[in-house]
Length: 248
Image 1 (cartoon, one colour):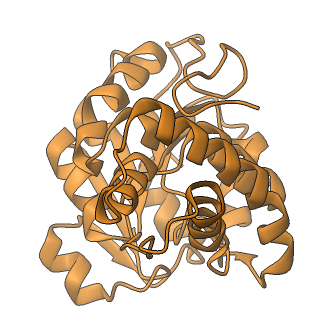
Image 2: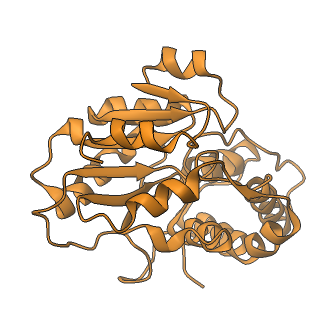
């Protein structure tokens, strides 16, 4: 079983340096609430994993929306008086990864509107590099995206085991971007997400943010958080493509 802080090179699209010269735009997609609605599978599997592994009566759900798995797990354990040590987080993550695939099968989840059409337009364009920036850990990101047949679209990823706070993914995100397109300016990098925390990450990185209302946040909240563009969903393909880059 792959572990929380112990993934092997090549297991995940973390950073695969490629020919940089044709790349004109890097697009970093959040997963939950942006690409997919898992029907609550992740939260349910994580809480069940914690309760089964630690057998502690005080383990309760914590807020999930837009946060990193590392931060969520740490808070869940600490609220119950359990030390969020490396070993405890590793053991919890292993149990979570075991439970997640079946939980996804049991839920009425879906790929969100416009996602497949947009990714299909982008995936083979040599001017574009598609990546993931998510609060999920590498293994849970893979499990979710493979379940919904989206994993193959992405060349690299920045994952939630790297930071407790979402905005602290900014440094690993920039490290990954530079391995693919170190010549790009901030205006040619876009984070696509569904929460104010996604917007905050984009602002921290000084890159553009397209926010969607598919994760439960309304347009007013996302606009007030500082999103550069807000859409109901990703279904309006042509205008979104042109906003990503004028040549698309």
